[in-house]
Length: 106
Image (cartoon, rainbow, N blue to C red):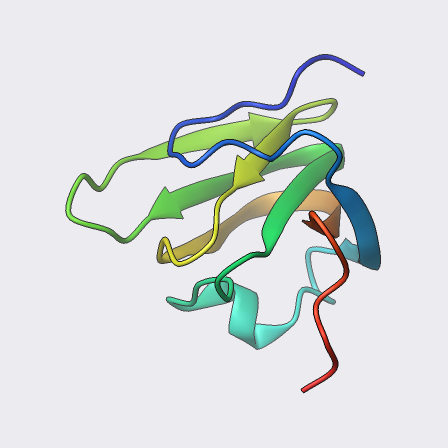
């Protein structure tokens, strides 16, 4: 796997580990919450990987911007930075949630 695309900081800390994976989701199965503005809690990073097809990833912070992610791309999503996904056709994605140590259950 190539290095994740990292458009925003902070970077994934050394020693961070995945503590949860969701997906894979096809275009029709993507949870509605991922398609509207949301962010990750403090201390949690996301690694969104496109397994097939493509999807638009949009930053909803002051910098804004978006990029189309294609099969094989992984984007690093830092904590507390608002974002959402926009479907653009057939796609399969999965998301790994990472932290320096697994966050406590809410």
